[in-house]
Image (cartoon, rainbow over all chains, first blue to last red; front, top):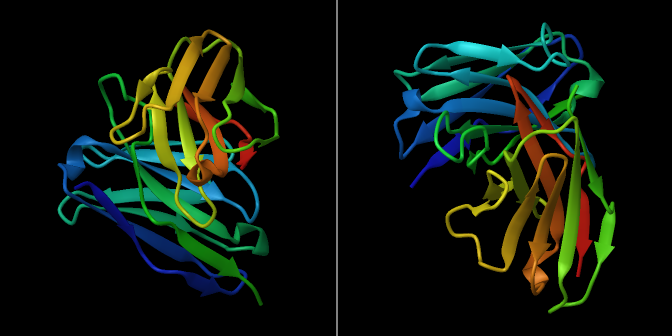
Length: 122
Length: 106
């Protein structure tokens, strides 16, 4: 069974940094892209960026480039989302999702993590 | 910039009724639209990929159609557990975009 398990909820103060993890299991982690998606309270889904753990090829949404850093470690089957200089507006649920790189389902998010709730408050 | 516009914003229907959700793309995107269901408090779940292909384990009452600029998700006979927000999504080059979502109330 494919599973993506994310790290737990976080409460941070403005200006602090945060690194969220997403561990994959049940499939060959290096062979699928991992995307990160933000969902602000009561709002829709926003694609942030994507990484291919096999060669660390990384792409960012223009809306998030420079604001976040995506990384991965295929030896631990984990991907990471780093948020720097947190502000209250970064308070949101963050999801990781698996993305096939080929076949008919290429480009879709076929399996999702449970989400990590980030709260930024002074 | 790719924009996906979903309609209606909210759909209120009764069990057993048919739901038709629309997703309009600008500019045209071929057929590679995906649809997701997100129930309250849950992660999104892939329903349809490549416009019309049901993901693993998705009931046959869910179907997708369309190409170019207009796409449709149809739920043929609503069940109470279909209450959720539904999102369309597309990839163009190396950019992924979601529609704003349609809330289905049953």
